Length: 507
Image (cartoon, rainbow, N blue to C red; front, top):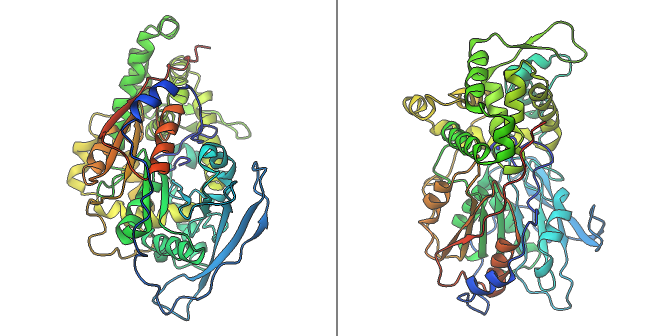
């Protein structure tokens, strides 16, 4: 599902960036940020010690050009052992880019971006973060580190989509035969048990030390918040502040909550359409049409045409439900659903089929799916208890489809061992901002409440009218003040003003 996510879900292409600036709240910001404290929190020593078996030496950065960033950046690599317990084993080159502070006296606490997915790389998103953090760049570098298994750090690519066999992608989110073929290919070049968040945390810490940085300002979204929690537990003195957008709890095994979360988001979408005069006028019987559409899918009677292929192919109910779930991540994509439901009710499945196949094709290139499986097959799926699946999925549009799809995909994926206490909820005193949209169809508000309770210096921000990992001027002002001051102030909760509902697609 970062990209936002194959993930936490596969968010459709074109809706992934976090930089939608929708409102300006200078007066509001002045009011709600008044309690924030000034000064810097730079206390602390480096957490942990480098293994004597790890390659030594620093990082040589050279001038480089990052797409969409006018300012010259500095790029480099750090060589690490794939498995720290095997000194003579395979070595990896971890790629990184630094967008330097624009001022003459940069502070030692950069903003370090932790991407979601799992499987997104950071360096390719340089343009997004250079713009998003513009007010902070005078004094601070932006550190973009491609997690091992992504981007410039030995990307673990899979090809799950087949042009010759689109029926597989109309049935399965994770076609098992393709997943097994990917595992066989990747095992020739990588030990897939060594691509966990614990290993990534060690890599990040080595990079921090090698570059001579002090404690980091971690900026994480979606599944990247898992990485932030792991790093914070392992190296608490190496973190100055944390931002967790659409947090994913470390002790909640995805994808178990997906079905209920999607169902709640569907109901919000139906209610929003009813309240919108143009949507309600165009689709006055939307709920009934959805029920009839769902019944046809569940009966197995829906067959669809695919360009370039003769005859028709079956369309899986679960596959449609999973794709809808991705659209429900954000308002600007969920507003397409009433029109799609109506077209399907009338017998035109083309918009849904084209969307599913397009996203399936793009997932292969947008995410390092090998890393996705290495993390989720070890950090989530083993902790789903079968007796809970029915209770958590019964009566929902998605049902147990996503859980069973991921369980099947993970059946033969190599098993890694997790550190003791790895999945225990985190407790921390590091100043941390949690931000979640109240219309997020992927990570509900209770995820934020659940995770934040262990943080003694926290600020929980609800972004009204917004969805997954979204950004606006309100939260930007809050984040800027937290990074500058090194404190979340005296408030525990804040609410950003509601962002207007995007117009529904009606034709």
